[in-house]
Length: 181
Ligand SMILES: *[C@@H]1O[C@H](CO)[C@@H](O)[C@H](O)[C@H]1NC(C)=O
Ligand SMILES: *[C@@H]1O[C@H](CO)[C@@H](O)[C@H](O)[C@H]1NC(C)=O
Image (cartoon, rainbow, N blue to C red; front, side, top):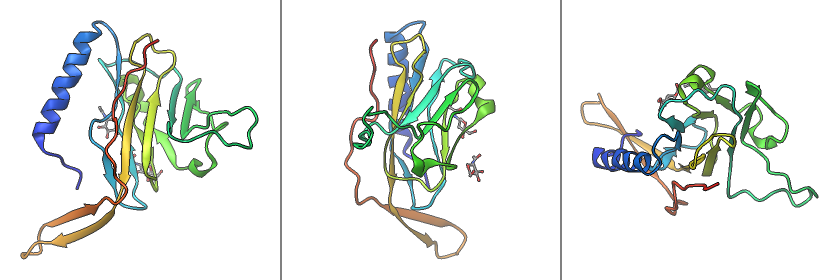
């Protein structure tokens, strides 16, 4: 159900190529230009990786929801994370309570620069992957997740199923941005 037309993919690859030329020799954090679409209760992989390949196992990786305001009852206005990885393991401190036991990184893939996040029972919204200590101009990327009602059909022969998603809340927004440091 999550295939997109190839022209969009080609444009995206060209875009990544151009960005790579803008910042030669730098490792860039790349998310997804297309929203990730899921049905309520689905498990989803939020894609994020480094380009070119770069081992991030020794670095801090933060996944957060940039549109989420800090808890007003917290006097320190601390940011809460969807997932925080530090010292080669998940750090559950400062994790949003609603994401407890719902997220995991693919530890083995991290040595190839893959910091995609597996989230179960996904929520709508924008998610940001961020590597604060990356020696690069592009340390973060945003992935938008849209949860929609899914209705599936079976074709006349009953052999193939295809699904349609109804995206009530989807307002396209920026899916990629740069952080200059
Ligand atoms: C990252 O890892 C996940 C899980 O193994 C995989 O689905 C995804 O395709 C990988 N992404 C890249 C860019 O290799
Ligand atoms: C994602 O996490 C769920 C829950 O822990 C697990 O069942 C599922 O196998 C994971 N997906 C992948 C691709 O590893």
